Amino acid sequence: MTMGSNAGIKRNRRPKGVKVVELKVRLEESTEQRLRDAGMASGSLSLSLYLERLVSQLEAERGGLPVLSPTLDGTEVTTTTAA
Image (cartoon, rainbow, N blue to C red; front, top):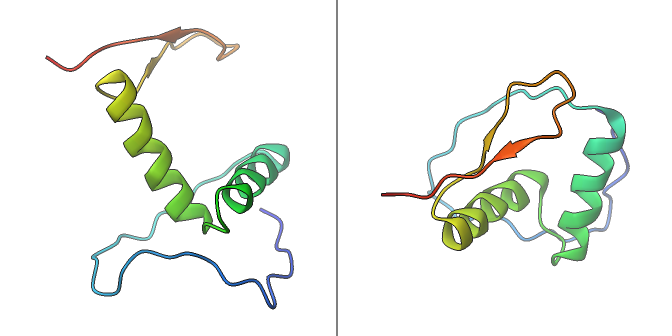
C-alpha cells in the first residue's frame, strides 16, 4: 500500500473503547486508492471505518455480504440473503 501524507486531515474515527483487531490486507494499488477516495468523499473516514460502514450498509441493503464466485476473473457475484 502506498502511504500518503495525511497531515492536517481530521478523520472520523470509531468511538474510544471499541475493541478492534489489526488485520493486514494486500490490495492492488488502484483498489487502495479508490477505497481511500471513497472514504474521504464519505466524510473523511479512515480506511477501516469506511470498510466497516460499507459492510454495515451491504448487510442492511442485502441482508448480508455478497458471496463471491471462485472464478479466476473475480467478476461474478452470487447474492445471498439472510434467513
